[in-house]
Image: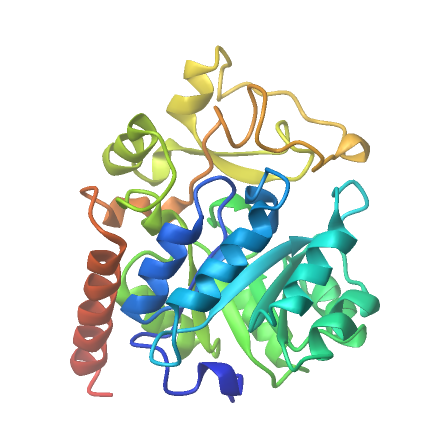
Length: 311
């Protein structure tokens, strides 16, 4: 399937580094882009007044056309603070790729299109994919079972299959992808790109406390729990972090989804400050390393998988 022109010949491996709350900040984004994958961050990670503009200026100054482009994530939910203000800055600095979540809005898409930007919208089912494309999104991030943080429950095979029945544009697949073979598998089931977050938590550049990074290194798929308790949206989290917060990860109550709020994600004893998001693919992570080393590993594994299948 055709990739956005901004991505053509600029990726060393077909990967978008997914935007992670708190963890994805300029150091990680720059390292990812310079290693040849899209680096991204949620705009809400820039918490202080004026900080988002400082970050955008830095990214524009330090990244060149020889690097992969960067992306910003907008949560388009009614509880999101400063959405219009942040969107205006993305337009001002002509952010190449914008990833929208939790709400499809034509005006947001049109604002990004006004300067030639490209909009991915992340979804967990085919119905939401239809809504996003009908309202003007350019591409889809299919968030399947096993993805870190907010995630769906559908098999990646089922989800991508349903989307490809009607959509021929760019699709990135998310869900337990942490090695190069899984990147190739995403393409084999007709996605264009792999969307990888959890494999970048245990990197030197990620803004995670050392205990979080070490927990990722020591954990496996069985250490992930799926719950909507912390934000009102179902997501995957590390069981040990839930225990450390004084809760029983095997007996968590359900949250009231109507009280979902993204007004203050970075404070309080909740996701993502103390309850740590992570996906099921972390068995591939065995050490804290630079982000460039993660990309190099993915690239080598991807090439080896292609060679093994004689592609």
